[in-house]
Amino acid sequence: MPPRDEKIQVDQRKFEPGLATIPAQAYRKALKSGFRFNLMAIGEPSLGKTSTVNTIFKSEIYNEQFVSSTQRIANSDSLIVQEFDLKLKENGVPLILRVIDCPGYGAFIDNSNQVPTIVSYLDGRHRRQFDQEMDIDRDIEKNDDELVHCCLFFFSPNCRTVKELDLECLKAIHNKVNVIPIIAKADSLTLDERHDVSLFDEEKKEEPESKPVAMRRYTFGACEIENDEHSDMRILRHLMIQTHLVDLVNSTKNEKYGNFREHWLTKHPIKFPEKKPETTEELKKRLDKELKDEIMGHKEKLQRIQADMEAVFQKKLQERRMKIAEGERKLEEMQKAHREHMKDEENVIAIKRK
Ligand SMILES: Nc1nc2c(ncn2[C@@H]2O[C@H](COP(=O)(O)OP(=O)(O)OP(=O)(O)O)[C@@H](O)[C@H]2O)c(=O)[nH]1
Ligand SMILES: [Mg+2]
Image (cartoon, rainbow, N blue to C red; front, side, top):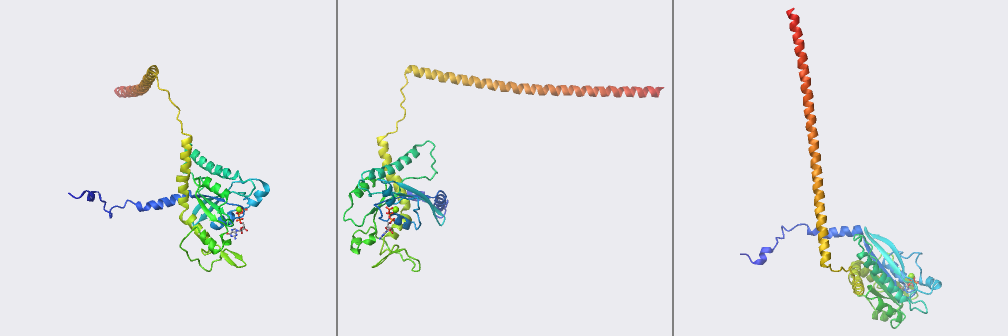
């Protein structure tokens, strides 16, 4: 007898049911439904939020509908959460990008209501997701994930320590959204200062030299945005879009939204309507009623069957009667024809006798 393991081993040469096509199927489905990425940017005025998001996606994401912090400060005394959707496509791969900006963050003398505003926005997204899941008519194919998948959090380069407001905000949002901290305008730091706060460490890739390069010119030289020696922009884009976009989306759903869901359900457990236990009398009544209904049902069914059978019988009887009447009519015609024929024959014989 062969050893147990050998018995269940599959011959790899014959084992080709088509598993290799599964990734292609997933790819086709993903292309069809498209991808969604919801990106938030938080930071004090003029730290480069707009410039950074535009540079990451190599597009003019922000348009005239977006309010800058300067406009917000002039027109109001608090922050707003502003969202803007746009469709991007690269080599046939569609992405719906939602940029969520918070113009006015850290811009006022009293910034005390700002963190609650951001938290309530994030909780609102989670709550919406939860309500959609609980909806009896939920459409699971619909790609309208509105959770915030990533937050670029900008720190001012001029501070020795993290500001009170930033700390409060990070504490409040870190378990609601994936946060990527960014030292804004790091090109204004010296090399030593920059080394101390370097966020990413990745292999460098050569860019073709002939391409035009985005850069900032200073009296002392130029800062190339896509050059890893000068800026972490290329590495940030690589991490956020090329290697970890799906991870960010999934971890938001599984961990961040999962936290909210667990917390929410603990606080608001789903209550099913309580049913009072039946008394013996009620049980007897219910069973009697069910029995009566069943007997009535059977009687009605029997009556229907009898009526159907009667109708079929009457129909067949009618057909048979008509057939007999037709036969009689034909027989009469034949007798009549025969009588006439005999009469003719008699006439012919009488004539011959004369
Ligand atoms: N030195 C330097 N300047 C930058 C950088 N990014 C943006 N800037 C400049 O900073 C200024 C403000 O940039 P924005 O991108 O509008 O900043 P923002 O944070 O969106 O500003 P608000 O929306 O008003 O809060 C512009 O003049 C940019 O050119 C950077 O990395 N380094
Ligand atoms: Mg801006």
